[in-house]
Image 1 (cartoon, rainbow, N blue to C red):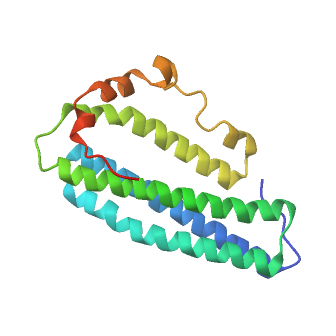
Image 2 (cartoon, helix red, strand yellow):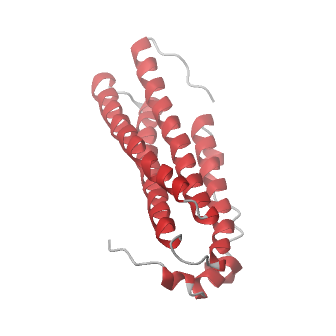
Image 3 (cartoon, rainbow, N blue to C red):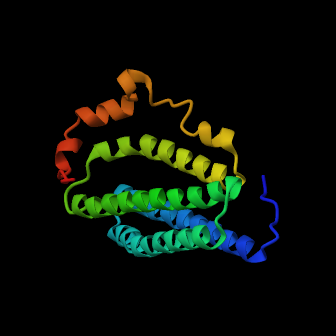
Length: 187
């Protein structure tokens, strides 16, 4: 569903700019996650370094989306669907930034793991990665199309619900020595 045009052209332009920044963030986040996982799987430190470098641009875009969103709220005081568009862009940008941070964490850990002999258990990550990326792409598609039903269906049906909430690959990964090879982080 495409939003109708407003009388205030400046509002439409500002909303379009906000949306474009969120879509740019989603592209960069996807690229960062792909680089991080490929760096891990291919044992490529250059891909890991590129994933880490992407994080700064994503952080800056999140700040810009927040600034622009607040500016839109203050200048135009949108209501109803316009307010939902602004708030959803701001909320989505913070989630994209967090995902990019996770990509950075994966890349940093991959660089450490790449200094040691390869672990067979790293292959167990791929089904989870593919599932997570499918959910990510569905969520972005729902945002772009403003499709509430698609958004509600993100992650369903999940083949990862069996086994007490974990799939067989996830259960095998949890029981392997791989989990103990990864250093714990403090929160």
